[in-house]
Image 1: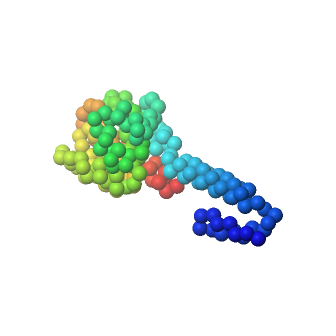
Image 2: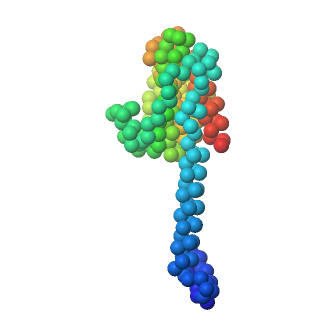
Image 3: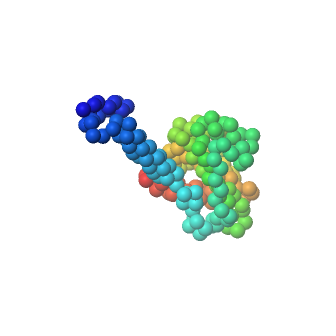
Length: 190
């Protein structure tokens, strides 16, 4: 009999099983287990991009146009050139973005910044000026402006921006934000 030490474990071997062969088998099993765990966690931690955005007509007055786009942290500069570094330092992992049209009059964009931790979403939210905004009960905290809205929920920061100012746009943005918040809540629970 021989004793084989592997990591923090010790295995007693009978002479019939060569130690080198057993070590190779154990390493192979551990590698397979680690890869399976990693892939399983990645699939569960990131929702399908479109699943976080309401479909056309799901929120009154709003129609989603085009496809949902995804920008990973390494290519963030392609979407928010000039400000990407601030988000990267806060731990952004990716941005999901979708275009919308409100009452067939106003174009808008919805961005979901997925951070590695809630502290990153808090950091970005707190670093931005609240001048001209009103606080809103949305997610963990939020604020609404004349033609934009931002809120954070868990490790996500959500920003909605309308490209035109209209009297009812801020109410419409609040409705769309609530639709996104519902979808985020479902995803964050899973």
